[in-house]
Image (cartoon, rainbow, N blue to C red):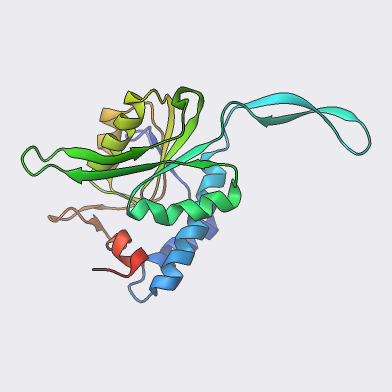
Amino acid sequence: MSELPNLTVLDHPLIQHKITVLRDRETSTKKFKELVDEISMLMAYEATKDLALEEVEIETPLERTRQMKLRGKKLTVVPILRAGLGMVDGILSLIPSARVGHIGLYRDHDTLEPVDYYFKIPPDPEARDFIVLDPMLATGGSAAAAVQSLKSRGAARIRFMCLVAAPEGVRRMLEAHPDVPVFTAALDRQLNEQGYILPGLGDAGDRLFGTR
């Protein structure tokens, strides 16, 4: 959509069906986790379709041939703790060689700005492609801070992937990081006064881990 040029909504019928079941308040914790796995895997297939390739020479059982493989260091997925952890296994089932980093964020009570309390990624970030994961893109504060943390360590090729996004969060990402594409399964209507996405799916972390 022209007003949000950084956004791609993945509207494959399977993704849309699973998102609908995911939203349902009657969906159990077990089923919720399974759906997040499945949706994340389907989304990763689309979100990685423009990864760079290079030609290599291999030998099949019949002859030598030149074929294509991913160029550069291994893809790295970086969940924002804690809810982003729920998206990792689905992507690893599709790309088992991917590395996994972690970013933990909290909001400073005085400045109200996100601060990373945990940051761990593989070496040589400038040579890697990163996918930052968080089920919900609400205000966009945590997402923008996570991307900035990666950039400050040298990362240059970054994507952001979420299950449900609010227009406010997508605009925040566009303003802060116009070079970072955002992939989502659903662009919802708005945020409510408490910062929850409407219609949304509730608190993704609580629903993933059975907490309140």
